[in-house]
Length: 281
Image: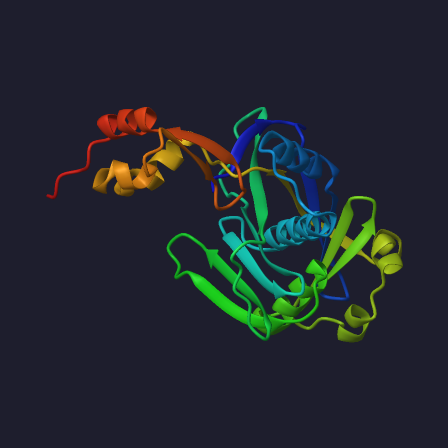
């Protein structure tokens, strides 16, 4: 998932991160309304219908992931898969920030997306939280922790408590606004543990804050028909007949965002002709 370059102010959620002096914590917050607008447009355009409960869970997970990305290094890509047994589903969210400098008049914007899987979901006695992250020139990180409940913000907190080096807390701040407080070394743990929504809303009045940075994100995946062709190319080269099973076309969903693509045999053959397999050196 690559960050996108977009003009200023087009459907973005801007997240500010602050250092809370004397408490040694990082506080982040933002209004996710613009991101949710694009999310609902995506659902409508791809004829995706979610149960209200699943929709609310995915929106919370998108907010939790975006705040997580803002607290992490800019060149990190993260993905979470949450396997639940009540309700039975897999919820997937992924996203990135970007460290590339901004061209004049434009800004580099990170992207987040996700989807809900309710079919053929394997569940065990415990709910599981799978996390993956990648950074250039560093080993990939993976972790799996047991979690409980189905509130996405609380599940993300459980993941932080068991897998990340420092704990984090998430807050619904009203409307489409969310916040996050991440403990730093030598943090004021009693203050951190006792935080309530009202405290987070008043941080600017009660605590000395230092603005660290502002990052921007949008809902997006980057999937295209060309990428879908590239993914299915090995199967098409092996057997076009088996891939299409006698049909002239297929409907394929993007595994990350659920976007739907109409793939035809004619289109696949044209792509294969334009992209011959590389010869071994």
